[in-house]
Length: 323
Image (cartoon, rainbow, N blue to C red; front, side, top):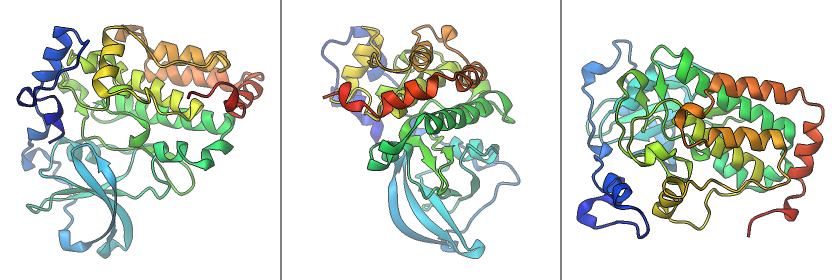
C-alpha cells in the first residue's frame, strides 16, 4: 500500500519538519481502504466483461492501480485499463464527465477480483514523458500556450461545468496524456473528490505538485488544483523535474514550513512568471480559479512581444538550466 510510506508503524518522519506537520502526515487515513458500493454507480454504467479485453503492455501506474494497454474485443477498440482492487469513486466520477480535455470513460469491469476502469487509450504517452524526451526541445510559445489552455479548460470544466463538480487533487504532468495528434487530456481521478463532499482531506498525490493545505490534510477548495497547475506550467516552460533531488518529506517541509516555491529563471517571460506565482500563493483564496487563468492566458496570447520572449527562453536553456 502506498500509504505505508507515512504509517506510524513504519516510524517514518522527516527531520526538520515541525511536530504538527509530521503528525498530520503520520495520522492520515489510508485512502487505499476506501470502498464504494456498486449501488453508487449510475444505472447507465457500462459493464465490460473481463474476457472481452485482451491485455498488452503495462503503461505504468496510476493512483492505486496499474494501467495497461488493451483491446476491447467486441468494440474493436484500443483502450487503457486501470486495474483496481475495488471499484472506487474514480469510476463514478469519470462516468459523469464529458470534455475533450478529459480522458473519455468507456466503462468498468465489475467482476471480482478483476476490477478495472476502461478509458480511451492516449497513444502519445504522458506529458511528463514528452517533456523528458528530445521532442520537447522543439516546443515553442504556440505549443506551450495551446497546452496551457487545454489543461486549464479541462480543469475549469471539472470545477464549474461538470454535472457534479470535481476537485482533482493530483494534477501533475504524469496525469496529463497526449493523444496521437497531441491534444492533452487530464486523467487519473483516483485521488479526486466530488466538490460537494469536500470538507477534510487525507494526504494523497505527489508532494512537488501538492498545495500546502493538501500536504497538511487541511480542508481544501478547487484552488488546490490551481497550485498544481502552476507546477505543470513550470514543467512545460523549463522541461525540468520539480524539486529534483529532494525527497518527498523534504519538499513538504520546504513548501509548508519555509513557504519555498520552485525557482523561476530570471529570463522566463514575465507574464508566465507572474501567473505561476499567483498559482502558488500560500492562501488558497488568493489563487486564481481556472476561469481567471483562462482569461489571463487569453490576454497573454494577444501580447505581440510574448512569442519572441518565450521562444528565446525555451531555446536558450543552456543559459539558465538547472544542474
